Image (cartoon, rainbow, N blue to C red; front, side, top):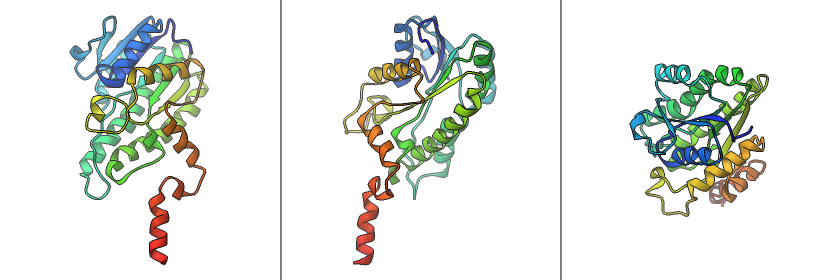
Amino acid sequence: MQIDGAVALVTGGNRGLGEQFVKALLDAGAAKVYAAARNPGSVRVPGAVPIALDVTDPASVRTAAEQAQDVTLLVNNAGTSTGAAILDGELGAYRTEFETHVLGTLDVSRAFAPVLARNGGGAVLNVLSVLSWVTMPGSAAYAAAKSAEWSMTNALRVALAEQGTQVTSLHVGYMDTDMTAAVTAPKLDPAAVARTALDGVRDGLHEVLADDLSKQVKAGLAADLTALYPQLATGAVSATG
């Protein structure tokens, strides 16, 4: 997938990682970049084409797909983080996470799949997370939605391969965006992450693991659960001893 000359659409393209994708695409020579947002007036990148899109509103998704018939690269970046925990998080927060990350991504991908096919196949880049592969009780809603989005992304890879559409997923830990403003742990530069992800799309990668944490967690999936959740090993010792 060539970025130079591509026509891209970035959901959530008005801030955070999405805004960095818009900038990186333009810097890489994309012919046109639609920056999609609920409020297109909030798009600030010079040269971007603002377009209204709410991924949780099917009518909005259909309208955007009808307006952007020249897209060759779709970046499913729009997301949310409710911070809902596993035992006391509001069920409504779980619904919000799933409607955004899973159903929203699926709806947008379905709407643009025929567009991509007519334009030669193109590519889809889904922004996932290291939390697609590991979870914590305090961020259970987000992780559950990202895990489901990972599974859905794998199904899209297979379903869209026949029409020549490449599907790439981005897995990354904390980035320095509004969503992680309260996080004190080290955070990646979203501009660098955007460039790394687009390099992966250009190189035809199925998955882009943008940091060491994502690489370590992915490798840990083949091990016993205690490799990712050492608390379970401690609990087993306590229960037997």
